[in-house]
Amino acid sequence: MCAYWIEFRRRLIHLLGYNFNKFPSHMALSILQLKNKNVSKHVTRDVLKRDELSLFLSNSDLKRLSQYARNMVDYHLITDLVPNLALLYFNERFDSEVRSLI
Image (tube, rainbow, N blue to C red; front, side, top):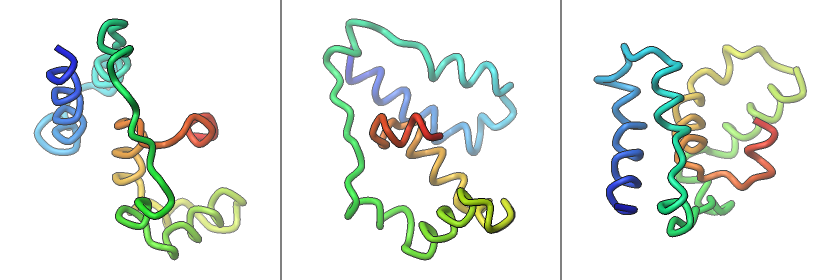
């Protein structure tokens, strides 16, 4: 059951960017926020390490994000990063400190 839920969640997250993009956002979020205690205790989160982050975001991407966080640039400069950030966020790849900042 645990492996099925993990695979379902991963595939749903990917499909929300494509085939399921017409779903109401509240429905998608409610599905993603479902927690099953039996599954949760068997799942270990695979938190992203700094060297793995370079697979998703370049140093210039991180610089743009930092500038945006300090209100130095407009959101138009980071809109291309949103899909990758959303994927990492909903797959719970950020540690709890980063998740609380988002």
